Length: 243
Image 1 (cartoon, one colour):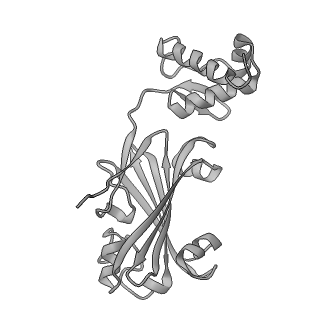
Image 2 (cartoon, rainbow, N blue to C red; image 1 turned 60 degrees about the horizontal axis):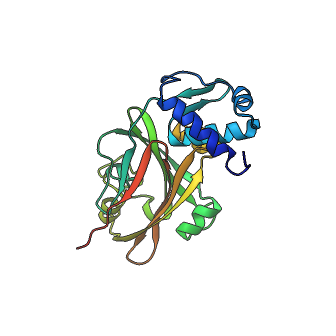
Image 3 (cartoon, rainbow, N blue to C red; image 1 turned 90 degrees about the vertical axis):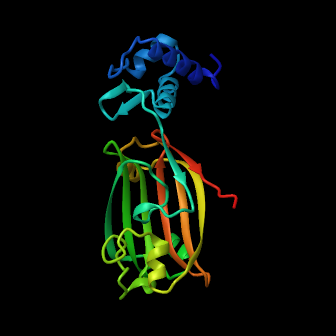
């Protein structure tokens, strides 16, 4: 097999065998070494082929335990909309549950400080949201708000107080700040070890990273967030109002 197409041909062959029922849902596939012998390729080729099928959602790789056939699962559509979303996160989520955790006086990293136009180390409120479908996270949002904006106000903690869960626009309006715009920058990426742990996926799985920042009418950045969406379980759609 030509080197540049070997893994895709092995992936095609494995995909066909899986769909034909040779390995039922939950079955463990032969080892990479055994498949490499069967297809007369190197183990790196079979590894790459299996990684492709993991990304497609046909297989599930379990560290130290092998690779298994996954049950078919419809991808969840995560809609990005300008309409207010629950719990201050971003995407509109149909059904499902969420959980959150907030820390105060977290020092801004260099990248966060740059986005918020504050100094590195300045105190922020960091709220981490995990959005679940059937008790599995499909999205994690890490939201940073500079304490210079909210310290001493009733909206210091996004998920506590009189405006809990109201979203960044409503919360800021309650303290006299008008949020007028948000900038989102989506990027494809592969999950780091930390991201994989947050999303319950494997290191290297495809994800979409979204860098989002909310701006007030005077140009101040009042919130910025790092959003991670699992590509295996979800697809992102943007709702664009035309009037």
